[in-house]
Structures are given as C-alpha cells and as structure tokens.
Image 1 (cartoon, rainbow, N blue to C red):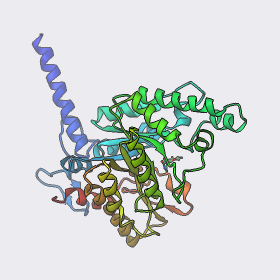
Image 2 (spheres, protein in one colour; image 1 turned 180 degrees about the vertical axis):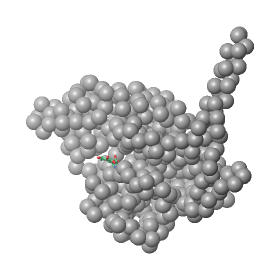
Image 3 (cartoon, protein in one colour; image 1 turned 90 degrees about the horizontal axis):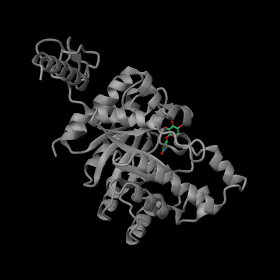
Image 4 (spheres, rainbow, N blue to C red; image 1 turned 60 degrees about the vertical axis):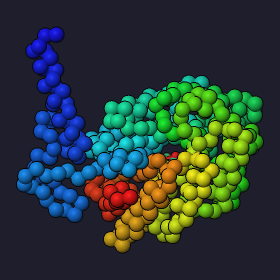
Length: 379
Ligand code: XIL
C-alpha cells in the first residue's frame, strides 16, 4: 500500500479519535486534534478547573458502564436533528436510547400496509454511531394509533378478524425491520386499568384478552433474541395494577408465552409520596425470572421550581435508580428525556414541568448530580 496514503489515513484516524474523546469528555465543541477541554470547565459545584490537565467529570454512561447497567433516554428525533447541544448530550451521557414517538403505530404505519421507518432508522443509526443500545417503544398501545385503524374499527369496516390480522402484520413488520438492532421491546403498553382489570381498549373489546399472548408470540417469532416487555405507569409500588402484571406474567410464562420483562415507566410527581416499595416490587418480578427496567423516568412539579422542590426531585430520581441498581435483573434505567427544553410534561399536566435532570439550558440540576452520585457509589 502507498505509504503516504497510509500515513494520511493514520493522521485522519488520530484526528477522528481525538474528536471522539473530546465528545466523550463533554466538549463537543472542542477542535478535532485537541483532546479534552481546552480552557478548563466547571464541575457540578461550579468550581473552575483552569490549570494543568483538568480531568473531565465522568458522564452518566461512563459510570453506568462500570455498574454494568445501561442508562437511557427517550429521544425527541426533531430535537436530535436540529439542536447540536441536544445531540452532543444524548451521545455523551447515555448508553441506550428510546424513540419518544417515532416507533409508535401512527408514525410507522400511517396508512394500512405502508410503513415509514425513516425517522426511527435515523435514531438507530445515531445509536449505532455512538455505541448505544436501542429500546423499542412500542408495538401495541391504545394511544397514538393511526386514524385509518381507529376509524375503521369505529365504523365497522375493520372487524375483529381483520383487526387481529392487522395487529399481527404490524408487529411482524416492525420487529422484523429492526431485527437484531433492538435489545428490549415494549410489546404491550398500558394494558391494565388502575384497579387491575384489563384496559377497555379496542384491543380488548375486539379481540378479547388473548391479544396479549398473541402480541408476544408474534414479536418473538420476528426477533427471537429481543427481550420482550410489558410496560406501564403507576406500577412502581406493589398495588392492584402492578399485581395484575405480576399475575399475568406468571400465567403467560406457565403457558410458554415469551414474556421476558416488566417495564416500570416511573413518571413521578413530587406532590405525591415516593413509592418506597419499588425495590420490593421489582424483586418479585426478579423472582419470577423476569427482567425489569425503569423505562420512562421523569419527576414533575408545579412550576416554577425552587431549591426545595429540586431537592425532592433529586431524591426521587436517586430513589428510582437505587431500586433498579439493587435489583439483579434491572439492567436499564431510562429517563423520558433529559432536558427541560424538550419534555412532554408541560403539554400534558397543566401547570407542571421542569421534570428532567438538566434545565432548559442543559445545565445540571441536583437530580443529575444525584444520579451521578448513585452510579458512582461503591457496591
Ligand atoms: C408521550 C410522548 O412523550 C409525547 O411526545 C407524545 O405526545 C405522547 O406520548 N407513556 C408512554 C409514552 O408510554 O409513550 C408517552 O410518551 C408518555 C407516557
């Protein structure tokens, strides 16, 4: 091989790896070739490290790697495309990503049989480029369904037999498309009511309770290696709803249905008490042989925040992570977005917000420090 070309290539590689190191150290804006922060940086407490060789603070993902857990975030793919600070933070801090919306039915199958995976594919590409795993969310839900489906069921043009076929085709197409690239799938999302009865969705109404086992079987057939999860909110503690999941998992596994995990969303609100029995709840799924995951953590409050609210929020985030770390089968902890700049909370819960670990300017909030401390603890 021509040696000057080899030399060039090597130089290019050095520049590239220096740039990667710089990104990993949290200085995405650093010049290629200048590894590490050029002018020093501020740590969490605002101390300035100006002289010598400042050691960049470990990112959440650095610390999580050492604990052999994945730390994830939901990703708003519009922000990912348009906001470079958002992009750099996603790459630096997280080892797992979940599509906040772009793997949902209304996005991937906007017309019957016409699939659009373009936005989701972008995210999967981003994850691959940054050494991140991808959580799949979600195959079956009662929300964010396309109009052709809900209207077809409502006007009777889609009968039960047809709906079952539509569901099978959708699950098969989506799981097959991402085969080998998704480590956990939320196969069914939010299928129980608070009292532990099955949610009165079009799925239950049209197909009866067997749709759940069907969904898992179809997903497993399309990608036998992906870990298949149930996922819900208000299932942090031991209560009627989480017990319904526990009983369902037990029953399905006894029947040989491929259910491998329980996802606990963990959308908390500081006006309520922290679910102190979270670890006990995760432990019972552990004993059943199921994996567990915190899948959508955020901790909202009535705005504006104040130091006491932020401290309570930090304590809640810490408690969620600690319970996962204490559970053998809890291998991933995902936040539902990481910056207050992009969050579903203000649009969903009136008067509430500031639910994330970074503020709208990407500054670390006490909750970020709490997660970092918890991950860094000796165990
Ligand atoms: C939310 C998204 O964050 C919003 O952008 C969207 O408008 C509605 O859905 N439980 C879930 C998630 O399983 O899919 C939801 O995500 C939040 C609640």
